[in-house]
Length: 226
Image (cartoon, rainbow, N blue to C red):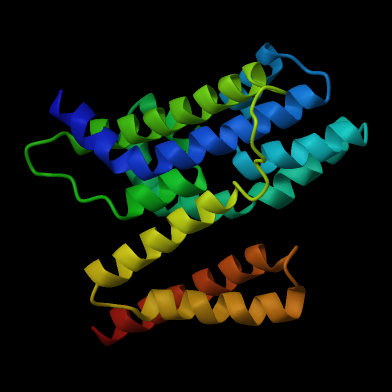
């Protein structure tokens, strides 16, 4: 029970973000003529916030399966780098590793990177519960949005910024709790440079590649000097 309480507390900021973004998605999807079960299926099996919103445009344009596959790869390519961080850790979690890989969203990744589990708790169980709770929040939002389509009296424009605000908080916490700020500085510089060169729609994957290369070089040099 203690693991459940601790994991739930870690996911509270994400809960509000995911539920409201899920509601926005459910409203948009059902606005295209799809039903509650379509929204539920999207949240259950796709579970990729930005990709699900991109799916709206793809459905409107009557896109092909190939277009959907390419779009998925381009939008979620960054998850390749997320997985590298936890590949050894997830491997030790048995069958749970498959769900951990599937559920490693941006927000879940951020929480797991900043996770400090008390010694009396099972960290593997805590990690799994964090991923599961976040997924449940998203599914709830998708269902509620689909049910309430056309009923809500307020405008949901800009609600997706809640995810951006969450990431800002995570970065601030990691900066505060870690003495070594070099990775954050390198990430910031790579992001700015790649944004200028490749523009907003394409910069993320190049920024991540640049960060991985530079940090790997720095780590290798540190080990050699050590």
